[in-house]
Image 1: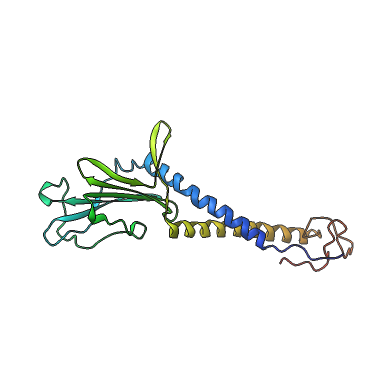
Image 2: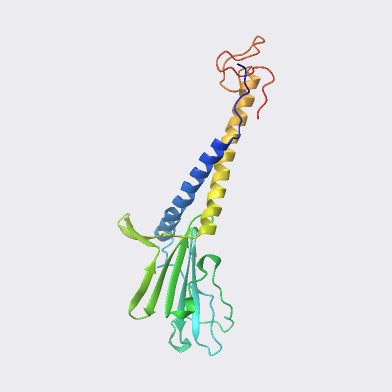
Length: 223
């Protein structure tokens, strides 16, 4: 029975592409976290940038921003200007909370630290809130510590769904596009060599049906 060659793009390829995209999106979190902490000294060697919010009484929270490829962090400090160790620009008035750090109630604690990792979008985060800036953390979530190359690395584990879904779609789209490109090039090459576009069997000499796979051997076009 004669049948058409398999479709270049089908639901199986889309499903496999989504699975691969999800795995790559999840894998980008520890990969980006490791790169940031190993090669860019995150937090240790990065210079924080005051970018935060202060109350009208000149006291309140100041957000310190840390950035490196694939990772970003914000630390909200409740400060008294005379006691800070860094200059606080007078122009600081806006709440700079990034989209992935929304809802942490940063100005309700003496200090809140949150970081997120992933590439190209931040896909998972870690949060530590402090009951008192001098006594240590009161609550921590989304944290996994692992030793890599002899040093402890913090891997954020709380999903940032918008970033995770976005990365999954991006990686899945790239994987599917790559497979489709390979299939199109392969079929074009087989057609030029007078071979069956489905299996590569030699169909020269006017063969109408491929004896190997049963696909139509004449007028096969990439689909």
